Length: 250
Image 1: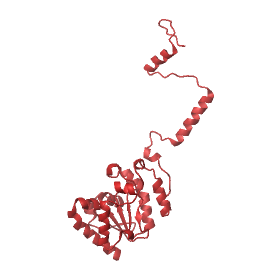
Image 2: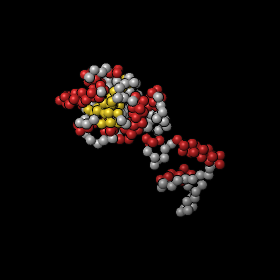
Image 3: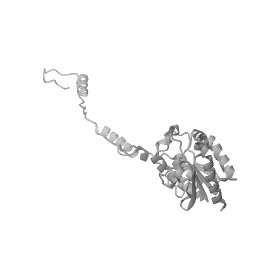
Image 4: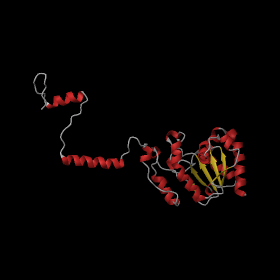
């Protein structure tokens, strides 16, 4: 019991604790050695799974999967289990890709939208319908090509992907390209083109030239969603499609 030296009276324990707590003074108590060992064990266990405050949260939720040697099914499973960034907490499901795994043409978009997140397939909304029509214009059925996105999860509210989110998905996209080994890549939209080509140029400039990725010819063009908003650019997109067709027929 604590004795108040001012008047010689003893303060009740509960009142003493109240005063000490109000002053921000921590009350230390003797701890039994067994209790101490139990607390130490719990602390050690937590240290092995809980992130340090100095570590980025996105780095602590990594599922360490080496994808450079994955086949298609292993890669899909790795994407489904991925927790490299916060998008894993908001997605309904991952959107891996769809189509012919021996296709001559790989189509790469930016990221899944709401429809894609719901169905688990890329380009299934209005933009997807336009993409299908664009492919048919150069005598390709959707089933003949392979379609994927730079990001495998939908960003909340369809916002632009963040730089770290794109970086986290790079290994999945690169492995898809390595497995497919297409004759040509058709990348649509500014963000997808910049990410694949490691460029900061606008899509209006990137589409003016043929590029390459690891020796594979790349044609950059406008995203079908952009063409729906700005039909006047369909003529330019048709020119890009013709260039793509020449590549595939060469």
